Length: 165
Length: 443
Image (cartoon, rainbow over all chains, first blue to last red; front, side, top):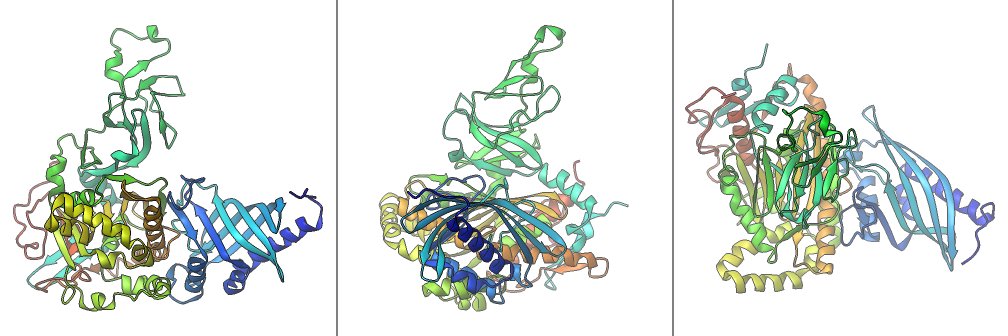
């Protein structure tokens, strides 16, 4: 395992990558965002009462493979995802970014998030942390695994998770 | 002036008119009356026995507005203890789940065993002879019973027996349980969410067969199409007619189901991929139950609503409750209930199927919530726009699943409870005119 230098170029590269990713999501450029995924990507949001469970064995809020995530993006960019049409406004604050490890081509990254979703003059805040597995590809970093782990105890009063966290 | 609930529903089977006054979704007085006449009187789903496998296992639940501890005592019995210390009222259990021999209130350390008996009072000698531990155990919900492992509570000490209350809904629990072969279990984790809308909108929508083609267009047109599955457009267009096995069915006492063949309930690719294991299970069911019963158990599916607040969606093996917190806020919990006989592979596929459609992060539920919250916002007009129409298919001899018979059944039970009446038949033939013997509410 490579020793991580928190002031090094890899740390800065990861930070910039996450900020760029958050911007694409906030600007609803979801097709461009999806280009950042590997072909074997997984996107997982565990249920708040089963945070450490395997999505094949316990209930999750989201457990997308690449086909599902591609569909999620297409649905959200289409006209019939009524929960997001008209679109909500979102703002993602991504902080405390830590390059945790670097092994072979894979980088493990931890970051905190607060995602604000505003719609009908109601603001819902989703708070938690990300766990990423990133890989280096031609043209830059790509996302192989993206876990958004909520600190919320339930989706109340939010009610829905209609955006990509 | 209090609202008279009698005039809130217009039910005219002769003319095919069924209207619900929209005050029922907004009025705080009606909401208070619902608490008293519905949620304090009806059997309410509280949990499944598989969630409490060992003595001492407990789950904290909010049911009918009350914090409950569903706990399996050291004697093996499942109880619904009211989670409030007999001393000053503190929650004695503040964990969502776990295993405990006793519950100790942290305020003054009164301690109860897992059967609810008071077993510890610090400085007990300060109390007079009038004080008796035996009288200060944690109180239980007045009635607790189960049907095939599904536990319900009732806060009315004079409630009718659960089995009578469930009426024709019992047969659906039978089917669900028998189809599981080795029993049912609640899968770990749940979906706990809410909706900024009235709870009855959630119940209507839960088995509304008219909305999937519009609200869930994206699920069918984008998601399922990726697996080569076509939307069931003939079913939507033809309802029951020409679609064998599709039928809305009143189940008595205000419960109702929408029935459809399991093949269409498992349309998505997850069901197809699991075909071989499901076939083997079908064979095992035939061996055990005979071909005829096995066909009923294995090939049918349904979406059942047990009045007032429980939905069982057996196509995707979901249990869902919707308990109101305010006229415009409802607390929803959905569990996945699966067969104990599932292989790990089949379980993963069943969960994925549950995942795709159901839940706040799925490809369908967020749009349902959006629709119902949009209704609630629309009700700000209800001084002018007073009535909601629920008459679809009312004059049809054999209603379609995209009609609203099952929703009228819900409303008729709601209306009966709110006005202190009771009828035998909640279907369309016996509408308002036939539901005679109006009585004064007993409370």
